[in-house]
Image 1 (cartoon, rainbow, N blue to C red):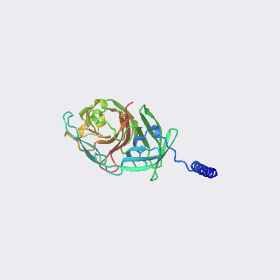
Image 2: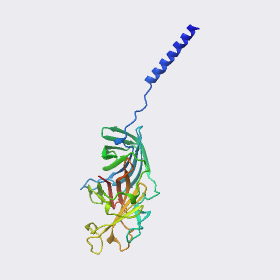
Image 3: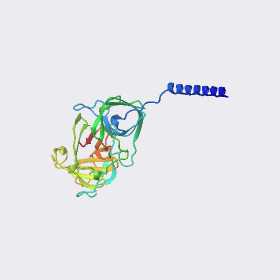
Image 4: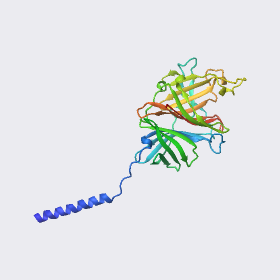
Length: 317
């Protein structure tokens, strides 16, 4: 009986060795990939905008997106896209400026970004190396971004290169939930600094851009408004006017915000339905759920190959 038990033990030991060896030589699972800047979710604005002082050498387009990074090295994107070669037009957001002085108008946005409008999506993979992240989308496009810190609870991506015509882009990421946002009426009323790259049919322009929300009046929980001082930026108005005030609206439905402005000399009516500047924005939210600013684009035309196009961001310092 003892000899038989010793034989069983030797057999079990052999099995355990075999299992151990099999485990040792089997392929190991893919290693987890670091999130860019340690953050999972990014709001991103990018596009094909001519360099400053240069005419368009190809298509002009803009894209506004949410990037979602996963620890297994995969990434998905939900995005809105507008191309200058296609008439965009304006759509009502359903948000009115009720409560602001002397007017009650509906805020508009680029068609396709209004509440209820869907977006498009992509999936792919990403790799990180030092301070860069490279994204390979499944349909063949590729992007490289440089990643750094934008604050204690926010990371930043700056566009480096692509294989599909992107010339400019900025993104800001955090660990906040995808559903996190701040109602427009509760946005801290401070100045938000940033940059923009734009095109209006002649040459590209690029520079700093600030949003002085501290000057806006609160129309309600979902809307802010400002009537600016007369400016020569409105010199193209009819009747010989060389300047006029600009009316600004900022409204919101969740993380999706709608920024619109227009020269008041363009109409004698309180509300304007013509060619305003219509800028889709996405809120930048910090790790702690606090409001940090926006990434945005402009897609303002009613006729193909015309209008104003831009990529920008505004983030509190």
